Image (cartoon, rainbow, N blue to C red; front, side, top):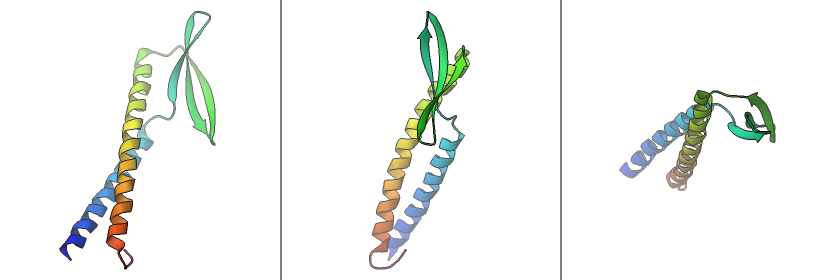
Length: 104
């Protein structure tokens, strides 16, 4: 039975990691900044989903610091989504391994 205790501990850790990743994803700004060149001038739009549909919100001329902030947020979002996917697979596996013939 020591294996089941190790699996339960690993399941608890995985669930905690899942919550942490979801919390970090919620902290990031939604959408991504898109640069458009219109008649020789550069303008920025914030692209995001709302109710399953894409929306573009005009931002105008944006300082470089905001552009960098959204670029980093996009990278972090991709990283956290990948990690979250891996943790969810691990949780599913651990729950099925612990279940066996009895409920967890």
